[in-house]
Length: 425
Ligand SMILES: Cc1ncc(COP(=O)(O)O)c(C=O)c1O
Image 1 (cartoon, helix red, strand yellow):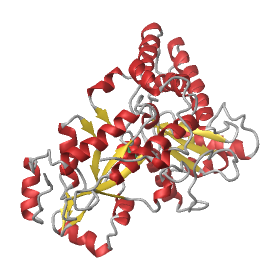
Image 2: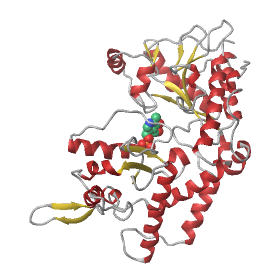
Image 3: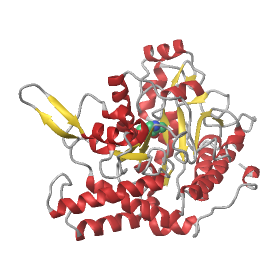
Image 4: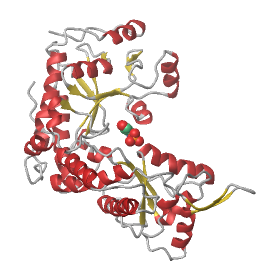
């Protein structure tokens, strides 16, 4: 094992104001419990964020923002301020965009999808956006979904950024919850007046000030997760203090992911068989932040070129305190495209007993049904990356795994395809 890491030399160094190892030591003592490489699942929260959140919670009286008392007003003002702060963080000008708080990105997508189903409309285009997506409101996406915990680690909160010009589509939704209507009749015939529709109409007539009657008011059903929104405000501040900007994080993780890719790709058995197959369209993507995020998806080979079940890799890593994710990783379309599946092979996989989730079949007819995913975050270090590469080398090439198969894998392997030994000694 001797990676040269040539591709890293030309990449800019980590731009943080303090070495990432120092940030890690100060802010993430809880990450000493292992090598955490599942930042696409969720990244990890900083200690200062939790301290400041706890301080605000214990020194203020926050009420339900739907009430009219003073504690409610404190919450309401705080929610307004955090909404504006979050839009600024995302680079979305509040004059052109609104932010609807939801529980996660899935809920944001569902909110949009439900509205389109009600309206049977189509999006303006199927474009893919990256970088400063909201710079030009005319070219920006109508709807953008975000899970804030994936950026800050905490709170567990999501958002839907809505281009105000397109907000009327959401305001026409059929179903609604408490707080989203300015009037509702439950007697003598049901009718309601949506705050969102009022805001959208006012906006189209040029009357909206962009703040007073936001579209969000017609879309946030029931009581807002106001404690989580409080935490989001702290999260944005702490994040800026630690990392400066998302661009800085991108520079840092781009360099690290290139190292991870080069490390994994350098691993070979004595007979020359590569240890891993990395899924990407072009290897030069690793090192280009516009084309590749901080994630490497791969599968592990045995010395004879057959596949090691991805669940075996995840399990073996987990036992050594290295935390990655494996399987369909919430992305069935991307995964089966990358694996080269034909539609009939998907049906065959289902017939063979494969299903989504951690106990699906890792290998069917000698082909993997998923991948191993190692993903990096703002506070990931070179040591994390090297520890993982070293684990792969030790476990599979040096054979420290001792051919031991986790119990839950035995049934799978017996019933599907006999696996050659991957311990090569
Ligand atoms: C690749 C991927 N896409 C989408 C999601 C869904 O995000 P959320 O659960 O926050 O809606 C996840 C969650 O882990 C994910 O890993």
